Length: 300
Image (spheres, rainbow, N blue to C red):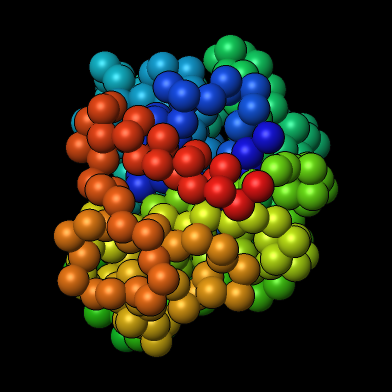
């Protein structure tokens, strides 16, 4: 059994490769939920949904979010009615948010709601939100704290930020996540944003302790000082961490056994394994997944 720590863009590309090589039933994906929020009355869990849609064969892999071929009629109708509708949510995607919101309002945990959605979509991989507690990633601006989604979607990451804050400061991993980490044979830390995607998972109580007991392979999301996708550089700078593979390794060094960085990366990490991490298509994703699986066998 393999457990993968994932955010919503970089790591799903690696999951696409693992999907081609490993039976879905042998994969557990622990997913960041610190970017979740309620929007237009419904519960958005973007990273969880990306992983669900990937394994369901529905993911829009042009954008790496939402459902392929979705329409946006409800979003277009809501925009003039609600200042809160700042994310373009597809109609089928919104149906998932509505269903999850209803389950949460009726007393289900996020883990239970996610399990129901996976069953509904025929997903065989085990998809686990990192925590059942509400957690939010906030960024500090000159006008105060704003949610990460507002920073990245509403303001397109163009607002100067001074720090990244998690609310609350302490939160627990779900029991299902702790069990998955205890029972797995190895852990892959995917190439997602180290601050806003992987960071919240690592901040869950007991998770770092369990990682130290397992073989762990981490894949850097950087080539030089630029992330392959997303706002990782600005967020790492605001967190006082060098935005590079070296900075990423520094965040993971306490538990990682093998660190993978791109063959083109000019920032050398001592002892790192070099692979082509630029997963532009299925073939590239599968090739990197095969490399990671081979490295995993070397740790057995």
